[in-house]
Image (cartoon, rainbow, N blue to C red; front, side):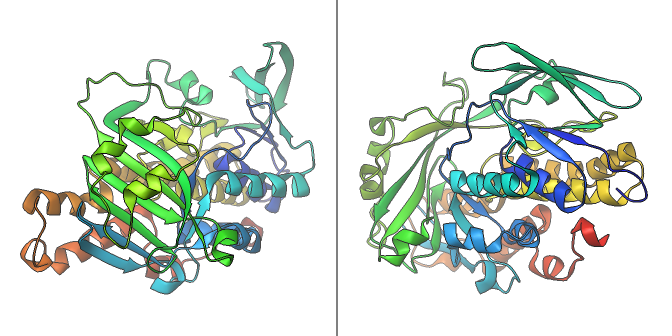
Length: 429
């Protein structure tokens, strides 16, 4: 921290955001450690996209080569209607002129990459697992954190820190301490079935596809460079269906198995020639079910010596490929503010002032389908398909939708390529 002894930081949650924060604080010379409720860190989840603004931050943390070895460089993004007719195509990452790639990667692979880097740089004991937050109390000099062992409920010694960061996900205990009446995440009526399938590569072999509309959608992209090296493609896919909002459904859980019979019949006709959707669905070894949920933006994240980060701060619908990327940006901005602002409480407030309104705009944009709203426009205007796209939606309308969302989400190419580094070691602003 600029001009004084750095505060020690306790991070609750060793997901993508928490681990990136630990690495960023370490790079800035700020002591950090993490507690994580799960007994062991394992590569859970399915595929995610890491957009160029987040890849830039991981590159500045010295992780570009590790990420490259575990991910696929996304070449293009293509939207189609439910018949496979193209609506929009745009280059991505380096192919679009960014200084950094866009990567498609297994979420667990990215988390393990970050976890390994944290243990290498901060020490093998930097992440204390099987440790659940019970509560915390603040005073003038720090935070006392009460903990228990999750596996058996036994009380653990309280820990003392100067700052506490809640990076503990959509069911954040830290957030609940400040918003005890908030309740469960909000479900929008959509259910996602997610899986990976090894298959023959489609299109460029690095294409991200979104097909359908807001009530029925299929998303897929390759995530495994090892498979690509032997001429195959491990395709991450998401099948989405929307139900009436009063339909009962299960609480979200990364590990809940899904049933193919609940959704495959709706996608049986979605073989576009260049993409065999029912074939991908049938080829999956394991399918997971996840209702699409988010949380309302709140007025504050920072409360004296405590603040929120990632899904704990701004859980959003998985639209626009932004969830993990925004957590990474949070981490880098927070570390930079702590490294360059003398008063740590002022640093937390400055972080909130920058990141809360920015992410709130994304949460709300995603509720309105973000850049994918053009798929809904085409469905409403041409539900039986079209002979000429220009008769349905103009090129300027498509371009404006894509550009507007990049500006909202913070990855406009020119702005990203020219802005100063957030690397706190150099004091850039």
